[in-house]
Image (cartoon, rainbow, N blue to C red; front, side, top):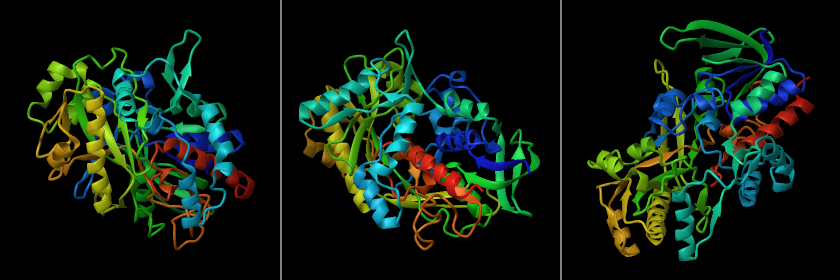
Length: 472
């Protein structure tokens, strides 16, 4: 066999899983479909980063009414290499709901606390005085003016002796750990399917240049699938290993508003937005998005004057979002297609909440001093600085929202019995010995907060359970 354990995917869950297994003495091999690039190889949040590190350069779409544009990382380190590193623990009420709904043990704040603490220490989770954009602070100021609850969210960030901060990522944390512990890492290696061999799993892979890949077969006794909420169920489907894989898909659907202020709101250092408004959570959350020139162009792509607006007013513009946790979708593979078909329906309640969220967001930005607001909705209508909430609601009511997300989960939910989930409460795939899922696919619902802290805490919990009960 090529390894005792193969881990498919090197994002936050995969890198953590591989590092812990290798440090426990297992012979581990990590397979990553994308290239191995350092954080500093591309400018953060630039068009070049999107082309190099995102699947389809960030242009994937879940079909629906409305559709939802979504982004998947495709590189060593996964989403940790491209996101802002914002961190939340799972809300206690959400954990209780999952425990009751899915019959998942060790799924409360007390049981998960050691796993959250481990992640927070490993990634240096905390607040930093620098690297926060003016645009982010304005959101909090607008909320305060309205009497709403706002917060600065902690990040994966390390501060050096000179007081300079940098975001932590998997290529700076768990990838070095797994390599130091003796694990192997093969980038640019896509797993097409897996099946049972003689006493092992056989993984049918293609490696190297995607235009002319070479076929490779790899073998391991145990396999952990950590390829994310789209690719993990797609691989299970291509391999015909579980009929319900991908039957559900959860996400945080977001609608956006780009605001123009009188003053400059973009820091020359490219400060990261960290403020979120939780006054209406978990039903609706408001926040500030990355607003680099590339991201502003994307946010205003539907506006005929969008390019000119960014060219003339880019430093005074920023994009904000209203996020909801409602809706459900699916991931389905089709013969002959390399990529799965993804669908998502935010539902009537989700659409109502998104419209309400945009009205609330407009209020908040007006209170922060925004002069003009450009919602991501058609027909295109500008919201003025003094338009009332009633007028904003009237302008948005007939609109078709343009939605997006970077938070995907729930496509292989864990459950206490095979009727309710794809895996058992610790990620073991029902009916498939020595095969585990250990990524965002396991979460039964969208948690309503940035999910990577949740994903990594459950991943550690599951690895420790495997080492104690299943490895032998």
